[in-house]
Amino acid sequence: LLLIIGIERGKIISIRKTIFLCLILCAISTNIPLMYTREKLKIVKYSGKNNYSYGGKIMDLLNNIHEIGIVPVVVLKSVDETRKIIGALEEGDVPVAEICFRTDCAKECIELASKEFKNVIVGAGTVINKEQCEEAIKAGAKFIVSPGLSESVAEVCKANNIPYLPGVVTT
Image (cartoon, rainbow, N blue to C red; front, side):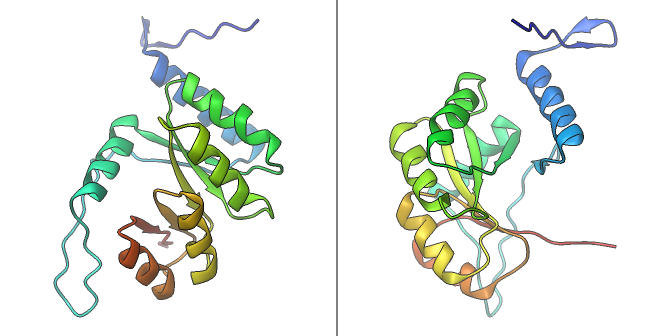
C-alpha cells in the first residue's frame, strides 16, 4: 500500500492537486502525453465565414472539464484495460479522459467507457480524419481532440454539436 500526501510550502495540499502532481511525475518518467491548463478556458465567438463557435450544452461540458482542471490522455491497448483505467480516474476524482485513437480498439474502448462510466466525460484524441471523428461520436465521445486542425473533423463536430479541440504548435 502506497500513501501519497502532497506537501507544498510546508502545508498539506488537496488530494486533487496531489493526484495532478503524481500524474505529472508519471508523465515525465514514462513519456505519457498529458494535457493541462491553469488558464481559464475561453471560447471565442467568431462570426466570419467558417463560424465554429459553440454554445449551450458545449459550454457546460467545457466548464465541467475546466472545473476538473486536468484531462488525462489515455492510450488503451485492449478493451479490457478500459474498466481498470477509467474506473481509477473516476475513483480518483478525475472524471474525464481523452481516449486516443492510436490503437485498433479505441472505438470499442470509448463505447464501453461512455456506457459504463456515466459520471466520466469521455472524449476521443488523436482524431485525424472525418471517419475517425464519426466513429468516435457514434461510440459516445463528448469531445474531440486532434493533433492539428482538420476542417473535415471540425465540420463533423459542428454538425453534431461536439466540442473540437485541435492541437497547435508554436515556435
